[in-house]
Amino acid sequence: MGRAAAEALPPPPSPPPPPAPDERMARRSPVRLLLGRPELGALLGAVALFAFFSLVADAFLQAGSFSTVLYAGSTFGIMAVGVSLLMIGGEFDLSAGVMVTTAALIAALVSYQFTLNVWAGVLVSLVLTLALGMVNGLLYVKTGLPSFIITLATFFMLAGANLGVTKAVTGNVATDSVRDMDGFGTARAVFASDVDVLGVNVNVTVFWWLGFVAIATWILLRTRIGNWIFAVGGSADSARAVGVPVARTKIGLFMGVAFCGWFSGMHLVFAFATVQSGEGVGNEFFYIICAVIGGCLLTGGYGSAIGAAIGAFIFGMTNKGIVYAEWNPDWFKFFLGAMLLIATVVNLVVRRRVERSK
Amino acid sequence: MSEAPLIRLSGVGKNHGSIIALREVSLEVDAGEVLCVLGDNGAGKSTLIKIIAGLHRHDAGGYEVAGEPVSFGSPRDALARGIATVYQDLAVVPLMPVWRNFFLGSEKRKGLGRMDIDHMRRTTRAELGEMGIDLRDVDQPIGTLSGGERQCVAIARAVHFGARALILDEPTAALGVKQAGTVLRYIVQARERSLAVVFITHNPHHAYPVGDRFLILKRGRSIGYHPKGEITRDELTALMAGGAELEQLAHELQSTQDSDAGAAAATALTKEAERLRPAD
Image 1 (cartoon, rainbow over the protein chains, first blue to last red):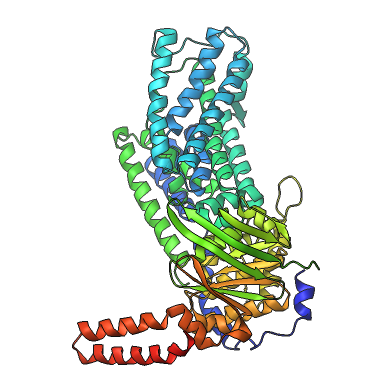
Image 2 (cartoon, rainbow over the protein chains, first blue to last red; image 1 turned 90 degrees about the vertical axis):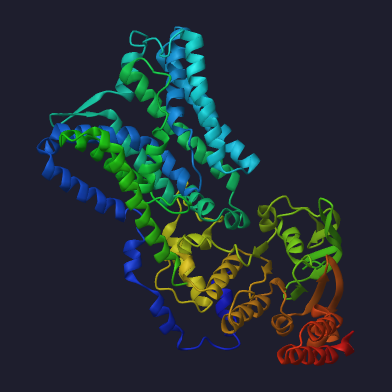
């Protein structure tokens, strides 16, 4: 069908009016193309912030400091990958912060209590954490309640369970050390080792982070799934009407967050060997901040994984830059909040620009 | 070609809980035909198309596609049978580029889950070009197109993906006169490509020029089903609006408003009602 059939047809009853191209000319704007990039605001912000800290903090420009900044960025950036995809898909996951701790606790407790090779704990944790993500997704799809409410509920349930189960099993708020268990060395190499890059120690999480960002970007821009993610976030009803499996896509996105949570959890276990059961609360907001600073719209349908990575980098720079500048780190959250505000205002302007001129 | 019409509903009904949304509605539409479904708000038009499109299952009656009884569980099932639906307000995802919208749900792939983006861009540009929409940039968000253009993209998309039947949900409702004309032209074009078209509207002036048959709904029931030769535009308007209701409105205006404007409006409405009366 298509071209040949249409060319054989007589022209439409009345030919298109000649002045039409003029009207269309007015609607096109090259500026919008540039502003249309979700990462643009974050990139400019990152450059400005980098220049700023380079000027005010002498230690900031040293390679070792940069490695520390990247590490801080990676620990949040890995989660921001999953969270940003979910946000593009139109949803939140407030349980993401404590889910990291849950994943870490599962791996540590299973390995230690059953005296298994730590890799067994790693796998059990993967399965159970993905199941948690699936539960979030299924609850959202089945009840139709806002994901904010669903994951707020699972957030508190997980936070409570983390503490309750850990205390019941170990009699303590932290797990026993898995440092001497079988497989710890190899697991540490994968999840928490340092890699020598031109004489500078860089944590392996930095490379995982870049890898995850690359994969997520590929999925978003080059695959059918990516098309579906943008569509379910931009307009779930439209997507459903043209045959996009909206429920499956959303459940998959919640499981994507869970996967990132599992990975971050494994980093915790093998970086510190013990896991504090009360950790992770509040981190979910940092992930969301990374995604939003990186240009993801809170309302969904727009954003990028690269943007979220830049957001995480900004987060890492601010976090460590304040220390290198020898300021009072108590102010860190103030700056973070201010940047969130600026980023969302920029996003708002971008979206209006895109949606105006209909 | 089979003897049976492409789409046939016989005595179809649908309840939403205790509310009877649709009762005993029958219609037929074959390739190369335009069936117009007319009705005021709440007449059951939306329920009817949702059944045809596969968003709702019908509770009563029969739904046949090319003679085969069907009961669709999702829009995908309907699409698989060549029945594509273009909705008035949810035709597209505004923030997504035109080409992504065009292929949404039917993405062209080239293995490993990768999309064939070049092909999709080229095809979108070519198909829209044929409809007279010349886009320099198929990467612009579809929300930046005009309402009429977006409808045309959605129609072009359905036709491209081999739709045999096109269900159009009030495609002209939110459009200006000129844009509505553009959409009507593509309805005629779709008919000439021998598609079956079901055109839902509440505007008899849009329906009459393009329709071959007219189904008029009111309060979930069919109150008229006529081929074009058997009904005039005025009769159609009268069935839609109801001459008696106009008279009633005129009466109300006269009794509640003493102003000259109210009286003038009442007089005009009375005249309109009288003009329409022979149709009843």
